[in-house]
Image (cartoon, rainbow, N blue to C red; front, side):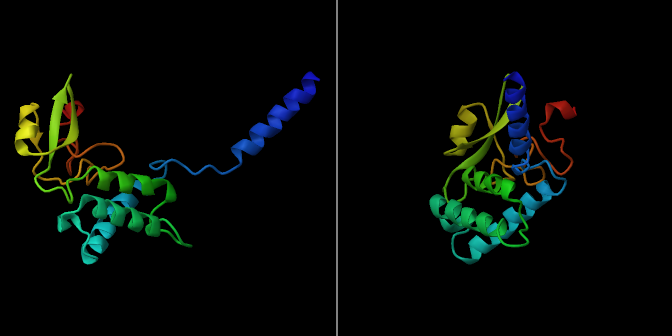
Amino acid sequence: MRALMCAVLAVSLVFGASKGHAAKCGSNPGDEQAVIDARATADSNCAAEGNGCNAGNHGAYVSCIADQANQLSSGPTPSLPKSCKGKVKKCAAKSTCGKPGFVTCCITKHGKTTCKLKKSTTACTDKGGVVNMTHSSCCSTTHPLTVDSCNASPSGAFLDPSAF
């Protein structure tokens, strides 16, 4: 009986492992660039459709980006891995696009800096934050899979305490 149970367990592990669970976004070398490119393409296409960042409707912007991410991750030769489309959508959701007056705010607590959306510059500075004037999203434009826009720069050193 024990041998039978061990055999059943072994077979289930083999078949469970072979189901082909998609690799997590970021596990393949090209994933980060694919997310960067998909965000740029989606932003451009949504702007052309009238649902761009400056259209004034956050819901319509996020919905448009989500549709674009779905399109870019489908078909026979997708430019965006399916496992990464959620990251593109999340970056849109964590943006000031379509939210007039909102800012991305870099807040440091307990030695850790994070990006938060705030309703205004005052709402940011009242929380002890610094307005991030270069980004409309809390997602980094250079390393969207690993850091937020407050901890990234082209060199990777902006506000990253481990870089100092």
